Length: 338
Image 1 (cartoon, rainbow, N blue to C red):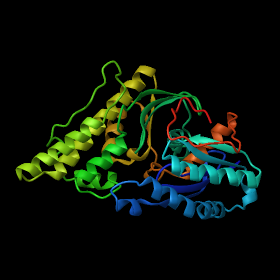
Image 2 (cartoon, rainbow, N blue to C red):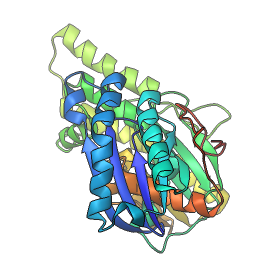
Image 3 (cartoon, rainbow, N blue to C red):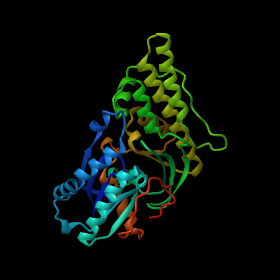
């Protein structure tokens, strides 16, 4: 079964063709990062307009590079939630029109479920159940993945997502957008214990997280140095920030896996590309003899292949949508209703 996956939840327009949920035939991505870098972050209106400009061409390229014609597409999967509502609507409306024109099923997909599914593409042997930490620019959650479409939230952030915190910390450090990679590069030359930064805990909710205090702490360190006219150890601050984020994420995920009895830990989303987070998970899983799955860098960020992959499993579970399908800015991963 060949599924065309469409992703437009933020500032990447993506289209891909995946066969039987596991084999990537094509994976096309148009990044708007350079456009939004001028503003230090994503401008929703600009993102939406650029999706409109490129989505039809990109989908056509994905089908062509898959070695197929339009008649070879058996279904269309599209990110319908969560994300920037204007950006999502571009993808949803394109997918609705394409499904209607081709006479194939339309499958709505939850964006975070798609990130988790990226691991199925990278690791053919991986199957649920497992514990997954989903960490991206807009979402941070510990997920109990009992089946391909049966999931529940074990813990989540109460405010900023981990990826959002990375971008904001990078911005006040004077680094370009998107901030994850520049901050990681800066941190490589720094002492990760140069600064004592907060590791927030939520009373009564051991697996929940908060990153707003960490973001504020970084801003205060920088402002204090500026006000006193003192030199700032930027590399040390970047390294200390990475350590604080990783030490918030990794122990919680490992504790949750232990409590739920899982020997398999999966990490997904854009922040899964961070070297410090990956290394800390590798050490933690090795110490506890757990299997660790983290997708290659190219599948950590937003892409159409992950949506097509999850769309296949949603299709098998009976999920279909009609022309009334709408997009939603927010939606829980365990309460998916389209």
